[in-house]
Image (cartoon, rainbow over all chains, first blue to last red; front, side):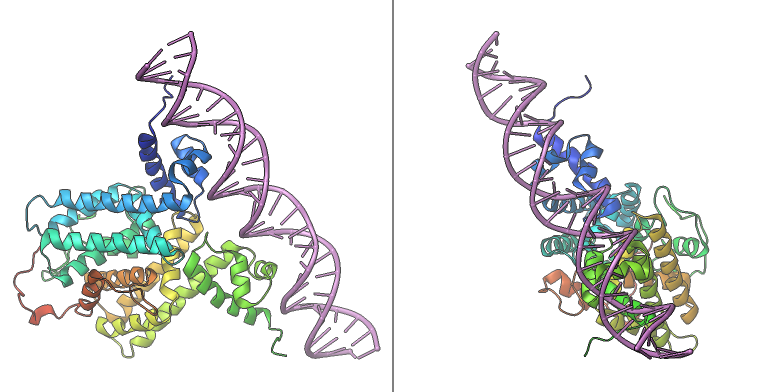
Length: 198
Length: 198
DNA sequence: CCTTGTTGTTATCGACTGATAACTTCGAAA
DNA sequence: TTTCGAAGTTATCAGTCGATAACAACAAGG
């Protein structure tokens, strides 16, 4: 019997992973608790029992995703007073995880509809911004520029312009992608080097 | 009698405005056709009859919003070969319209769930990016930087960090907001040579 | 006045969904 | 082996939603 019982903590963890996948696709309103349950191989009422409600599950997922993103940035800044360029490598790792950034985007978008989701989303966003500043000692302007680029990447990932299994590229996509990774030094002309992904 | 009959075209236009408001809050899945109908003061089945389906209405709304955004940018660029700084004023006008940018964000987020919505969202995004380049003659890097900032503003607007009726400001919000509006001219700043390069 | 096309409504349905309740099964300790 | 708390399921419901169908009301031309 491969089917073993897990503790509530283990099952919750597994359900959160399933929920990240599900919510990344459908968002809060567009995902059913049964979607999550099926992904994890349990029954739908059990999801409700472990998290109380779909709403509480979503809040948990958003917070969890934010924590994982912050951890990626910490790992990407090995030394004190790291540079923003070091953190930029973290984005590659975030994009490699197909569902992390899209689920966060859904959290931002859903902030409109629900006050508690809104508070959670704002807190997560502030935490990430603050972490970037603390890790690098970058100025507010530089950090905002960094976060802006991250936001663009997040949207592009949600639209599958970049990331695993992307759509067929159109001219503006290749142009936009190729001009990434040149944050400041566009002094030395155009350099169509293969900087598409790591 | 304030209640007058409208032509199908007029009613559709009015319904699109209502749908922008409704979809901006709930997104595609989180908004009912009855929400839209009530906002416009008509019955729910009539919405379906005019647009065919909720899905078709959403596609129409996204496209319409993209057109309006492009028009704002065109109006903000009075002369040929305008500068990006000119277009930046357009963002203020976009933010003043409480629902335009959030509804577009919902379109991007929903691109994951539906193939046709995805295609529409990508097309709209490419059109806006291309328009910015055409209006200003900016390099790809500059345009990407501009669009990135716009994406950040869109998310901040969705979370009501900026825009009409914002939430109570926390330190990271004020810091982030105050460091906007310095897109290029940080040459006369404190440490122009201390910039990290990739 | 009456006919006719368009605008708009009411009635209704089938499918879906989150949540509750009650029941069952496992596994480890006693 | 028996016990018992935790893990997990089936059954079910009350509310919701998009869509269809049938009907009604209005306005304008003949």
